[in-house]
Image 1 (tube, helix red, strand yellow):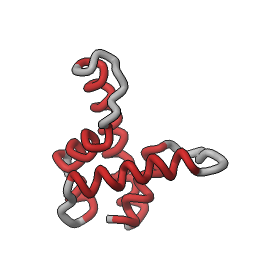
Image 2: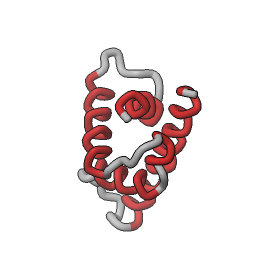
Image 3: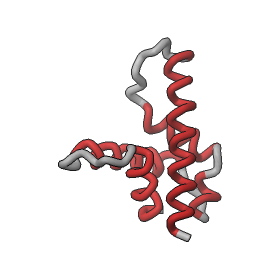
Image 4: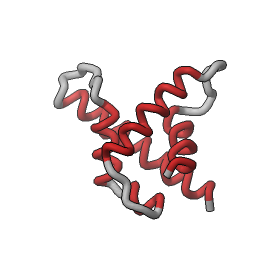
Length: 96
C-alpha cells in the first residue's frame, strides 16, 4: 500500500534525523552539518531504503532527492504543517 510505504519512509527519515543529530553533537561538536544530505543518503541506503521502495537506490541519487525536498519544503508558502520527514517521505514515494 502507498500509505504503508510513505509511513515506512517517514519512519526511516525520522531515524536518520535522530542519528544525524547524534552525529552532529558528537562528531561535529554541535556544529551544523552543511553536508547533511549525503550523510542522510548514505545512512538511509545502509539502513534499507532500497527494500522499502523495491529497488536499489544510490546515495548520490538519494542525496539529490533529499536536497530537492528540502528546497521545496522551504519554498512552500504557506509553510507545510507536516514535518520535513513526512513531506519528504511523500516526495520520495513518488520519485522512487
